[in-house]
Length: 82
Image (tube, rainbow, N blue to C red; front, side, top):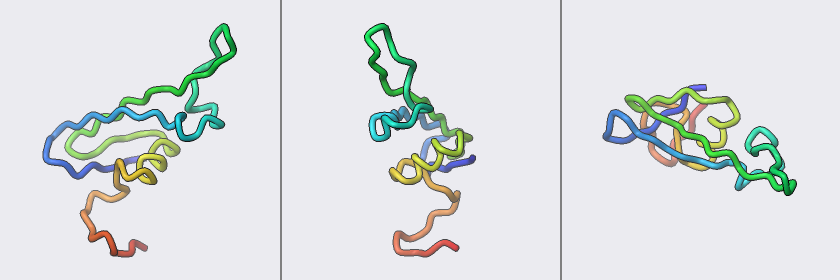
């Protein structure tokens, strides 16, 4: 999935740990250590010229959290997208 970042730089790096918000999702957690504890994975998302290609679930997380956009177009906050 492609997600978009509307910033001024040509390259933008974002570090996220969706497992902090969703520890029930095994795809966002590391394997259990010797104590049986699991830690959230750290994802490094790099936007080149405002575009990053990520896994669908990670893309949905970034959009839901307001960290990325699903469109390369900048829309007013109250605009409805079909």
